[in-house]
Image (cartoon, rainbow, N blue to C red; front, side, top):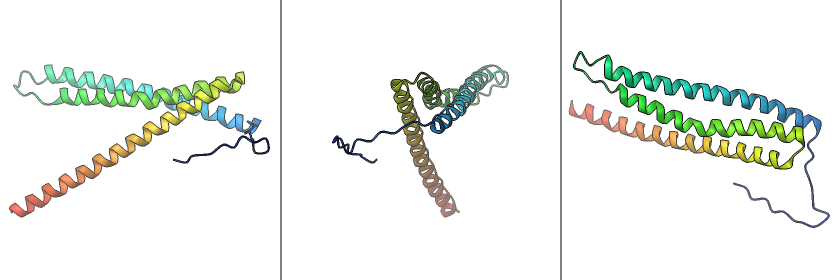
Length: 154
């Protein structure tokens, strides 16, 4: 989005110092990021289990009735959602681990890697929001046109 030019003259070289207050905030953020990531992994597991349940239900429960609902398709959709959800959760988990180890060990490489994962988390989440907004707009347009055709037919 924004490009920052770096001038390398001696007078203009500036560094950012991680004060104890900033370190405290980052360590606290790492704890919450790890909590949210673990909850994300739990939710992914639940999505996979629900998907399996839907697929098994599709093949056994309605077989006697001769009806085959599309629960198997919904099970696959749950698996796809879990697979997509894996990436931002993993980026968040990596951020939490690497920022903590980087601050404790005073390792610039870990801190840089942590912020790289945080950037990837926000980039992936932002792209998913854009995709979902596009799907919502498309759905509204389709439903509006179907509604218009329905009322015109009456």
